[in-house]
Image (cartoon, rainbow, N blue to C red; front, side, top):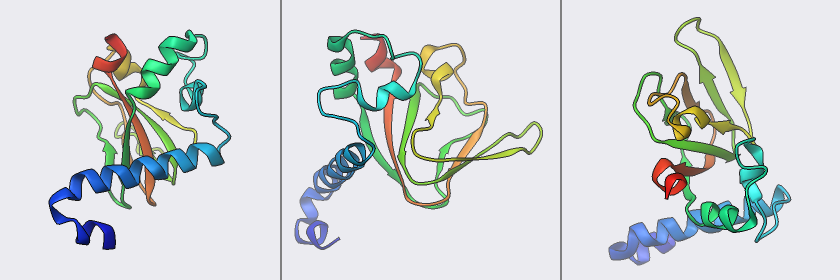
Length: 143
């Protein structure tokens, strides 16, 4: 907050830089090495992709932070991306039967949405703690 306050005109860039560093540190703590498939290994979709494709996809990942109570995905909302929960705890809730599942680091959310199998999220996922998430958008996947 001190850095952001010192450079108010650059707030967005400073925030994104901080989030990028946080995501990189979490990935190191989880054992993902730079230049490898990294967090993508958590999804069966990417386990056998080429090294060059994995590098392109990793470069296209967006780093985000969700605060406790923030909605990551909402049942029935349109989407085009897949989320990799790097750190924190979230809750996945089905509106059909009110079942809840706790999600932790390593969880992948929205594979079917990324692939275009569906355009809406089937479950509401809400951050229970500060969550560091990387997002892969369909446009990155299809380009």
